[in-house]
Image (tube, rainbow, N blue to C red):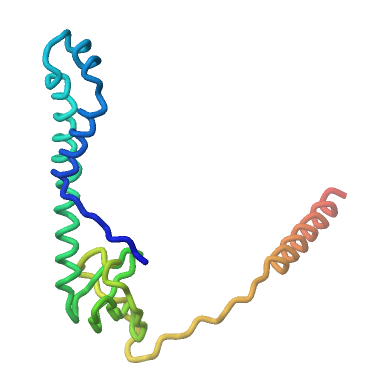
Amino acid sequence: MTSPSISLSPITTVIASAVAAMAIINPAFAEAAAGGSGGFASLIPLVLIMVIFYFLLIRPQQKKLKEHRNLVDELKKGDNILTGGGLYGKVIDVKEDILKVEIADGVRINVKRDTIAGLTDIGPAKEKASKGKPAKKAKPVKATPAAVTEEKVAESSDADSTDSKDKA
C-alpha cells in the first residue's frame, strides 16, 4: 500500500518551524540570553533567516518547477526538444506520459515526459549524402588489445635490431 503524501506550502513550513523552535527553547534560557527582556526578541533573527531562505531559495525553485511543468504539459507534435540526457530530437507522437522522439533519420525513441529539459531550435541529426550519392559505410576495424600490443612489440624489436647494427 502507498501512504498518502502530505504537501505543505512553504509558508506553512516556515510557520511550523518557528513554532517548533519556540517550543524547544526553554523560557529560562531565553530570558537569560535576552537579559530578562521578552523572549520574542530572541526569535527575531531566526524568523528573519527563515524569511530570507523563503525568498532566496524556496520561491524561485517553485517558479522554475511551475514553468517546467507548463512546458512539459504543452508539448506537441513537431516540437524540437532537448532531453535531460542531452539528446536533441523532434516530437513525432504524443501520448499521455510518453513521447515518441526522432533523434536521427529513422531513429525513434520513447521518452518519458518528465525527462524533457526544454525546447530548442536544433532538430534531430540528418544523414549527409554527397550530391545524390548514398553515404559510404565505414569499414569495421577489428583491433584487439593483444594484436595492438604484439604490433608494438614487433616494431620496437625491429627498431632495436637496426640500432644495434648501426652501432657495430
